[in-house]
Length: 614
Ligand code: GCB
Image 1 (spheres, rainbow, N blue to C red):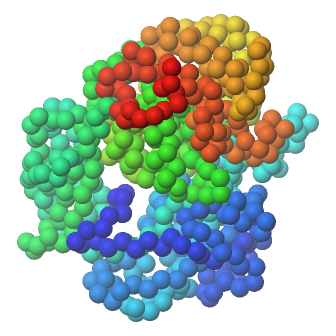
Image 2 (image 1 turned 60 degrees about the horizontal axis):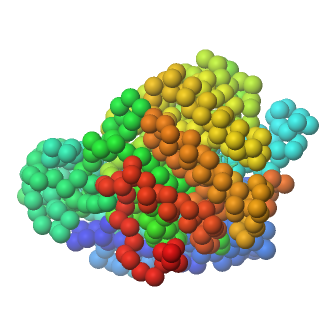
Image 3 (image 1 turned 135 degrees about the vertical axis):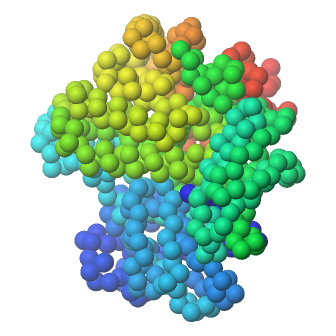
């Protein structure tokens, strides 16, 4: 799916602003036709894009899970409406959206972190007149959605053993279940003969293949533009065009060089539509226990992150995207994982530009398997495949994306029906499906500690991701033992599979300003000791290809006695101030040989930095 763009052929209107919202806890809205006229009754104002939870906390939205109707109005200039199709483009609606325009049903989309577009043309009022747009967003999940819900009806959930695990709001995962229209809502006026998709395949030898999907038109012209906008190659074809570039500038964190493929759709000899698709030329390869970026060994230093901020919730927040990348540059990280769901396209575009490597994750977090028969799992499996396919379609052209992560910690809840033939087949088929969509990027699966090197998902991936909390959740404070447990497991896993391993999570909750002279959990000193014990074990092993600290910043979770409002494992606070460990990591990552050279983003310009005072 193409990212919205404005040019000589395409016009964009941003529908962001103050909308009306009304909760529909009983789900009566559709039957009572709330989409047909202006919302009435308990209606509030909400800023879009943005999650409803913190904006409308006192209006009952803080922990609200369910349906909420969003409405706005718009007018389209006559000239634009007459000669184009008008598309609604929603960046993300968490979790399911149903759309009406002027009382007419337009369509729906399920999946809280993916964009969708719907053709509004036939339901529009005459040019210049007001249109009434109504979007019902439902944040409820189920055992078959990705991510999954807890099943509060299940026998397992209602045993005394699970009472202590109940979260509020109830989730299977350790992050807040925000709801709403969280990313840009736009109108795109596009000619009816249009370019609807572009895929750029490129290689370090300079070969570039541009594949297009078009509606109408006779042929396409492709021009390759360098980073300064100069044309360096051109050719035409029916829908696929092969080109050859001289003097390739490879894309890498130290030099994130972006080309552009300008695609023009030709109909009866005239250009009728045009789109500039950015791309970078880089190759990633897994070989034995190593990963190579542009044929150089790669070590990924960085973080598991969350996309969440005070007030906007999981809503689009461009200044924070810049801030986060700047802080990652400052600290010397070269990569991050979009744990535990796909991030805003704006974030991906920034990573392309600023030179960060991304492990791009689908929202398949803490999956529960309620049956040991593969066929019973089919509805979940189909949704999981759909989530992967939509992610690959959205993000395939980003040079920053170097790996797909297809799951994080299945069986966190220890359901008995896991670790058998059905789950093994589940992950095998999922892996093959992902490779079938994109054979150029390694696929990761991320496991938790329960089955260690025997987890059935480890076999079906190119890079093994493991999240470990020895010394925190198990044998708290015993870092000596944690180091031994980690070392044993890493060695056994590599001996068994011979694949590169990455520690995708390790971390300790830390209250900024809390100090101690001995090992005391939650203090800044303990976070430093914990982090560096793990780094010591990992860095002594060649087959460990990355270390992602959990988490980049503190983040909001559902309520539970384990969390003081936030998960406090951040290296930065929720408002992005450094804890003590940040300075230590900065020194360490900047001095580490493996991530020097082309694998480090450009360091920030010299300035007066506290951390530079010796
Ligand atoms: C994990 C999960 C992550 C949690 C983290 C923690 O293993 O993948 O979502 O937030 O542990 O802090 O417990």
